[in-house]
Length: 131
Image 1 (cartoon, rainbow, N blue to C red):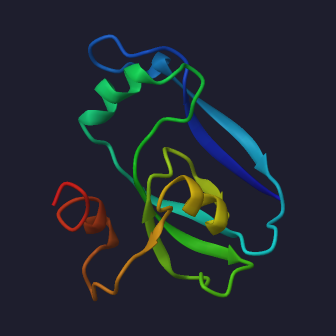
Image 2 (image 1 turned 90 degrees about the vertical axis):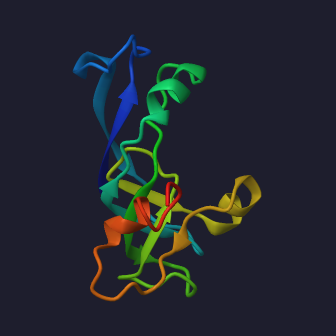
């Protein structure tokens, strides 16, 4: 079993976020089902919009944000171990994705294109949404 860590909002931000506004919570993830794959976060986005946008969300949810993650386990032939993805996965260390469910709700994570020797973190910045 994989233990994931995630930042949960415990209090809406007033002005600048404070360490007491977030709590680091650990959760045990279940084994993968067929067609699912497991991601391990490599880079998390910290964007200005997050502070304002979080005011619209209830206390108790995982902190929102994009991330670059590596596929570390897969039961889906379309998502190979070692590939990287970018997606709105929030501030968490590990995420299980079921592409069928993700496709119903949103586009889900996208496999990163080969960017050669450039750092993958560029896909959160200049090659990502803000770029």
